[in-house]
Image 1 (cartoon, rainbow, N blue to C red):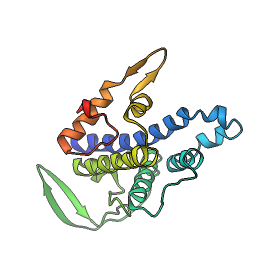
Image 2 (cartoon, rainbow, N blue to C red):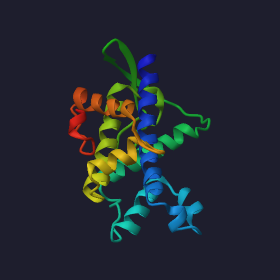
Image 3 (cartoon, one colour):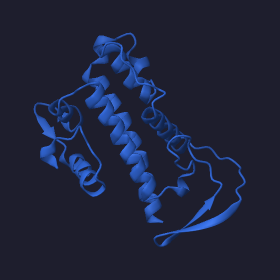
Image 4 (tube, rainbow, N blue to C red):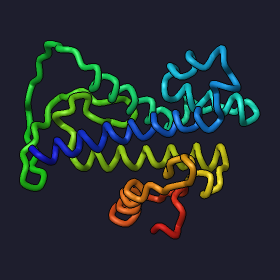
Length: 199
């Protein structure tokens, strides 16, 4: 079904966004110059470890609180993404005991396994637009926390780092800015790192 396909794409791309921002931060702080002996190792860090590396080295030894539910949800999401992208065949039994009608699609509601904090089904076949919205909300909430609350970047710094390409001049990536505008307007998601003039 198309909804499931689009929902899977949305959820996976939300995680790719987290990875992309982490890598953009490493580029911003030019780790290859500043940490030449460790750069290769740092680039292989997990996504959350990259964020922690930035905080530890550039923000007075600050770090992400792994006990914070916001951080636990992101760790949950990254773990699910890794299992999805690096999937292996497994055998399992499932006792279907109920069916739910959601709009015009029947979904099997069984004792399916879900992630600990995000409560996202571990099997992508159960992902739908409600789950993709939930993932998007939590992804943006984490980026709000990190970019604005932790690092205190200005909106201009964030624009240059995330929504532009650095060649001879700054060229803004309005396609991705427009995606965030849709999230802001249609889902009422608060995006603290998006310049208000775009919404």
